[in-house]
Length: 120
Image 1: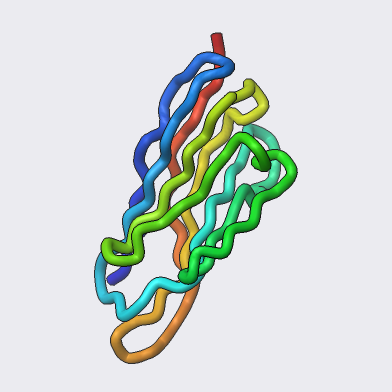
Image 2: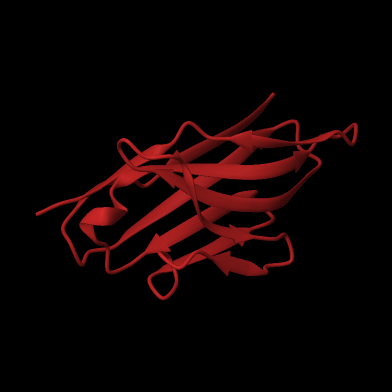
């Protein structure tokens, strides 16, 4: 009923940039908090950045200064601009969002992930 679909991953050289997108679709009344997580090979999933509907942003130390989270409330899309990428940024990046349905039930949803590989 609700889908989160990520796009924009790929292979990039160290120092390069990528822009990830996540689009929410389906039975949606409103999309509240959104965020990006990542899971590197052999590691647990970790938070990267979050953004409220009002636009308040938070970043983990790994993302500060290099990544920028943003969103388009009209189209239920969020973005993650990643600059100065490092090999340690290699991971599957997941979109997360708290979505309220037209009958006012809210829950968190996850996308299936988009792979980012930083390598020369």
